[in-house]
Length: 399
Image (tube, rainbow, N blue to C red):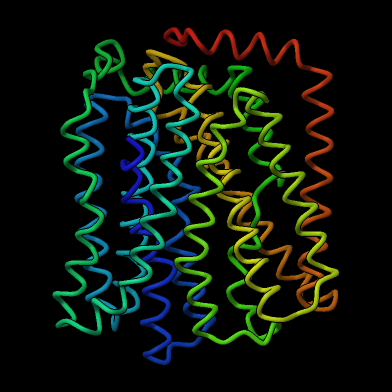
């Protein structure tokens, strides 16, 4: 089931690695590349607005298959439109919107099928498949595009997004909820708003929207290789295969701890330990070895944090939830927001406080502080949170 997130990893490679490389080779200014990437990345957060549609009218299998195909076609269109920046931007936006919604549909679908005691393993493998497919696609993308006729290479790379389709056909999927399918849009939206008021959802949103365990440095360290006298080839190796392996290992370690620590405290524990490791990097010399330790360490903890995020979301969904895809989409989208604003904070700290050490300090101190604040809140309100989580395990139609 974890392989259901392959489209997310492959499309992420095309958006964040392949297209920027192609644009740079065409001498497009870095500021314009960053703008195109930002527009393409926006649906990772903004698509939650459309997530309620995934629980209305059709089965989640139907949505997952259709959206995966749309994502692959738009990714191919973007790659072959590399010289038409307006069309390229529109296609990247559409591809990421389709894949984001596909992920919401799959998360709600699979989360409803899995027993509570297996949701940690599912959450870990979903993130492992995402990180692993991202790394593999990043490693071979430019070889496909440069070693084969360009359109053929673009078609093969984009077709990797479709690798999850056989899984979608094979996994059982209940039909769309008949009551929701027959509702008017107004009644349906009333049910969605009722869902978002549930205490278990509100507690989870609070934790995800704050910068407790975002590890946004993974998105900025790749541009700091010169600060560590690290060659571009080594930066590419560590940022591609190295970071993916570290993310997969971090993800798959989480099921070993979930029986010992409840999901939300475990998430804050990962954030706290990661913040301490980041703080420790300040004292190390700026050389290639330290760069490797920073790149692999940050991706390791981010992989672990993403795995716990999946576990928390899947537990919050409960069983037989008619709005599972909506709930998965809203909560997963919330995890993207700290990545955006913490990346901006880390970048400004780099400029204002002495380079990479400024980024380290800002990321570690902000994340560590919010982990402690949230930890105290969870301790004081533990009884109320436990009642909310118990209610979420037997989800009824929101009314």
